[in-house]
Length: 432
Image (cartoon, rainbow, N blue to C red; front, side, top):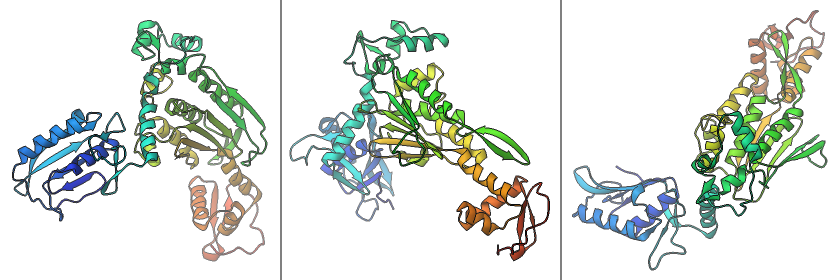
C-alpha cells in the first residue's frame, strides 16, 4: 500500500491537481505522482493509461512555465497487476514555476506543505523568485564596466593561471564582450566590504577595535583572515602531563570559515559580511540563507550547496578552496581534539557560523586543576557551572588523558591532578 508524504502524491484519476503538484515538486525538492491509486493507497488502475500518459505530457509541456519536460519522466507502470501512470519530477533549476491558464489561484505558483499542494503566498513567491535570481546574479551583465583586476591578476599569476580575455570568458567573467557581475565581485571596484570588529563582551556597546576590508572579494578574504589572526591569541592547553601552546581559533578553521562566507554569500542582496570577535567565540555573519533544502546539520557531513557556482570554480582554480563541500567538515576536524563543536545557523536572510574560542573553555579547567590539590565531582560541577552529566564526562576525559587520578570509592571518591604532591585537604568530600 502506497502512502502520501512530502515527495509522494497519489491521485485516483488525472486532473488539474496533477499539474499543480508537478509545479509544487518543481518549486521544492522534487517528487513522484502516481495516477490510478485509490484513497486507501491501493492500486485501482486506469482503463486507458496511454491516453492519460499522453494528456499529462501534453498539458505539462503547454501549461507549466518554465518548461519542466526535460526534468520530468512520465511512464506507465504495473502495481499489483494494475496499470498506473507515474510522473517523476525533479527539483527545478529555474524557480519559481507556475501553472498557466484560466482560473488559476493567485499567481499559479504552488508548493508542497506536508501531504498537501497549496498556492504559494506572496511572501513565499518573492522568496522563490529571489532565490532563483541570486543563483543567476553572477551571470548577469554588470552595471559597472570600468573594472580593473589588479589583485586578481596578482593571485592568478602566483598560481600560473593566465587571466586573458579567453580565460575570463571561460570563467564566466565576460559574456558578449561585457563584464558580468562575477567579474564585478572579483574586481578592485567591488563595493560590498567585510566589516570586522573585536569586542570585550557580547553586549557590543563598545569595541576594542574595528576595520573594513574592501576591494575584490578575494582581497577582502585575505584581509579578514589577517585581521582575525592578528587578534588570535595563544593559549596554553594540556596534553597528558605536558603543556602546549595553541591558538584560540585554529588557523585552518578561520581560513575555511572566512572563505566559506565569501563563496556562499548572496551577492544579489545589499549588505556586508560581519565578523565579530568575542572573548569566548568568533562569529561570521553573511547575507543569504541556506541555499537549498539541506538542514544545518547536513552541512557538516560534506554535502555541497552552491549558490555561486562560478565564483566557487574561480576560487577552486586559484587553489583557495578544495573540493566543494569539504570546508565545514575540516572546521569540525580542527576542533575535535579539544572537544568543542562549531555551529551554523541559517535565518531568513543571513547565515552565521560560530567558532568557539579554545582558551575560554580549556583555561577554566586548567585553572581549576592548578588551584585544587584534590576535588570531588560536585566541586568540579559547581565551580565550572556544569551539569552533573557534563561533570562526569569531564572527569572521564581528564582521566583518559592521564591528567587526574581517582582514589577512594562511593561517597569518599576524590580526584587528584597528576603530579600534585601532598595529601587531600581536610574538607569533608561530598557524595559522587
